[in-house]
Amino acid sequence: GAVVSQHPSRVICKSGTSVKIECRSLDFQATTMFWYRQFPKQSLMLMATSNEGSKATYEQGVEKDKFLINHASLTLSTLTVTSAHPEDSSFYICSASSPGQGSSGANVLTFGAGSRLTVL
Amino acid sequence: DAKTTQPPSMDCAEGRAANLPCNHSTISGNEYVYWYRQIHSQGPQYIIHGLKNNETNEMASLIITEDRKSSTLILPHATLRDTAVYYCIVRPGGSYIPTFGRGTSLIVHP
Image (tube, rainbow over the protein chains, first blue to last red):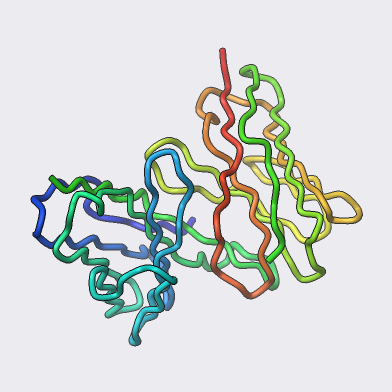
């Protein structure tokens, strides 16, 4: 089936530095990818929708200048957390629509394994 | 989007069937029912989806009531590896983006 690869799985950085997380669709093209954030013991919160070749669409309350999203190709979207601070420590998860899994009208997402960011 | 209601937690004995309910009483005609699960510290995993008819795949069965106001995910022979948070999501056809509620935390015990 469809696979979404996410890298790195874990990253620790110092406060004030920037961290880039990559999300790749393997063996299929994804014109749209989605980025979620999950704090401990909470559910996933959609941060933004990444569109190949155009600007990302951010959810209300998500700072677009802090969470830079680039979707430069049909198989790669990146999320860069700029000037990270301890409150940005979280589990970041990307996803893409899986080809062939949805019945007529349905859309099934395949998720990456997630990236755990710890900002010291 | 239709709101879903799930019990916060359930437990099940290994080898027995796990039946996870979901209430979606405000579902509209073009909305699908999707189930995903998230094992601790991993990304969510798609399980199954349906519109009107019951569905079965290698992972689970989905039973949707005739009025579509509720559904049940059935794991026929639960294993310890099925311990996870299970999310029931209702979304219109053609819409990609699932939004996640709190889900049901299923614990399968020996």
